[in-house]
Length: 206
Image (cartoon, rainbow, N blue to C red; front, side, top):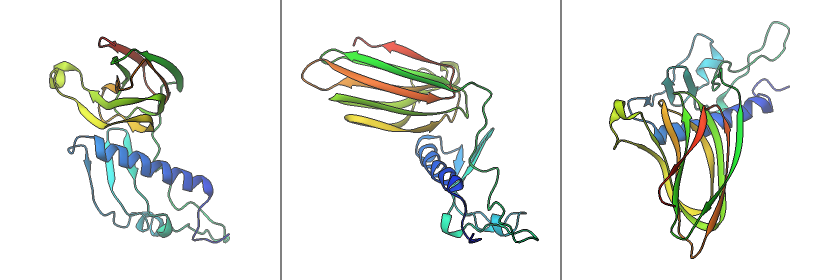
């Protein structure tokens, strides 16, 4: 095995780390995330091969890695060792949940679905519809923390599908506002999987 390459499992972890890093960087408060060039660590060659941006949030610590520069270690017997360990993983004491919800919206109907999450909780999601839908993917902290008007917008747009990954930058409600833009009734299928407390529905007259 070439010592400059890592296994496919590590590559998958790297890809997930990049996705999570992009989502958190674009959505979280700038006070929670900072970009820096990572210097050589105490692990030697493996640490010095890791470059990118580092994000920290309580139990969350991840790095964006340049795969081409990762170098596997070699022991005294010539066996390949890990190029990086303990990176891009967030352990959870919550059970894994998976839910698929069917959301019916009348003409001009609107609604919100939110996942109740603690800081550091994560989930992956996908929603799809045959109709054109406006969506606002955002989060609210408890009102006693930031007031009723504060929210963090992760993404907004319109279309028939959206999917991604989110790590909650703070404890609160994280989810979707949907508005039916089509000429008749619409149906949305929303699937979420991850570590959260529950999914709540907020009726907005739709």
